[in-house]
Length: 117
Image 1 (cartoon, one colour):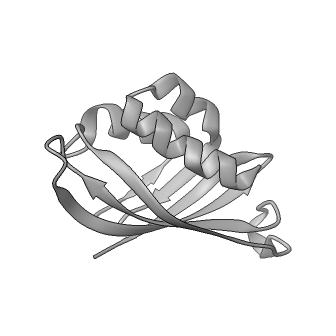
Image 2 (cartoon, helix red, strand yellow):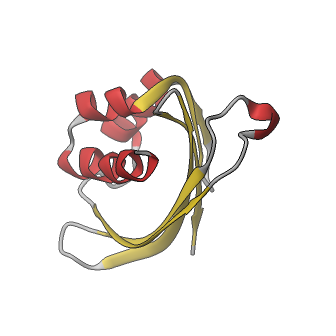
């Protein structure tokens, strides 16, 4: 289920379906990006809808890795999902490669840590 939720995140962002995106996120979701930290579902949805430098993009997923774990002391569900891929602009030109590491809480995305190159 966690893998499907992570992949649904890209579908929602690429389609501009911000209601679906909100449904995937835990209320206190956090997105750690190379350029900023976004805290809370509403702030994250607002950023994806209005604040991204380039909103006409698409994600191409190359690899999905899942790991089990006890959630540690952060109160997260067991396990995490890492997604490797590339981001493309509206013309289909590659912008950069990324790895997103997702953690979950009650079946929703609680944290995304993004690494780019």
